[in-house]
Amino acid sequence: MAVGATCIYHVNSNCSDLERAVPFYEGLGLARVLRTVPSRPQPGAAFGLDEVAWDAWMMHGDDGTAGVALDLLEWRVPQPGAGPPAAGAPGFDRLVISVPDVDRVLAVARTAGGVVVGERMPDPVESGSRTAIVCDPDGVRVQIVEGDRTRIACVVVACTDLDSAFGYYRDVMGLRPEDVPAAIDGSMRDARLTDPRSAVAVHLVHSRGHDRARRRAANDLGLFRMAWSTDDCARDEAIVRAAGSVPFAPTGRLSVGDDLPLLEVLFWPGPSGECLELIEATSESGRLSA
Image (cartoon, rainbow, N blue to C red; front, top):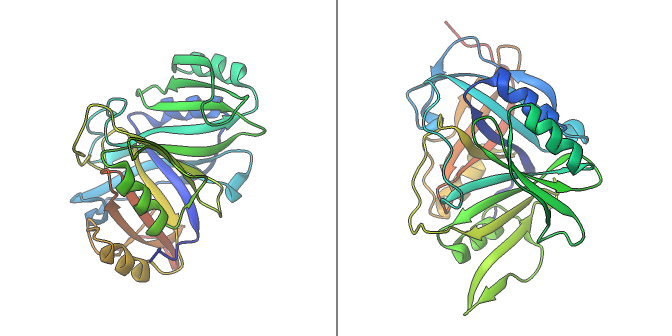
C-alpha cells in the first residue's frame, strides 16, 4: 500500500556556507523564494539528532512554488558534518537540473566556485539532449541536462539492491515506472520512476563497489533528504512502518521559522540508506515556546 502523500515537495542539500552555495545554484537558474531559519535550537529527534538549528533557502526553478524546491541548508546546531559521499556510494548520488542553455550554465557555475567534471556528453535518458556533471562548492554532484526550462528534474539514487529499491519507490512511495526496467542476467541494471504529480523522476542505478548502505548523519554535507507533502503524516507513518521501515522518531512537530506554520514531519531511511521525509503543514505558527 502506498502512502497518501500528494507529491514530491523538495530535495534537501546541506552546505558548509549558505552565502557561498546560494550564488552557485542561482547560476544554475534557481531562485531564492523562502528562507527558513528558526530563531532558536529545538529538539532534533526527527532528524536523529539531539538538538537542531539551521539557516536555509528554499530555491525554485521556472515553475516557481508549483515546482519541486531545493532545500539548501547550512547547519548551525550541530555544525556541518562529514563531506559528500563518493560517487556511486549507496544513497542519493546526484541532483539533476534541467536548463535551456547548458553552455551558459557551465560558464556561470565555474565563476561561482563550481567544478565541471564532465561536459557536452549525450544524455543516456533523453535522446538528443546534452548533459554535464558539475560539483558545487562543497563537492556535491549536480547533473545539468538540456531542457525547455529550468527545473529540478530528477534525483539519482545509487542502490545496493536495485530490484528491492524499485519495488519500494513504486509500491510504498507511489511512483510510476516510466518503462520496463532494463535487465542483465535477470537483474535490473537501472530503473526510472516518476512522481505523477510533480513530474520529478527518481533514477535508480546500481551502487558501484558497495554492497551495504551506510547511514549518513542529517548534518553531513550533500544530498540528505527527499520530502513528500501529505495531508496526514500519522496515517502515512503507519504505512511506512507496515512496509518494514523504521523512522528516526515518531511523527513530531518542527518549526522552520517563527512566522511560518508548524510542520508535522517524519524521517526514515529508504532502501539504500537515503533519507525520505513526509511533511504536513499545520495551521499553527512555528514560533517556539520559551
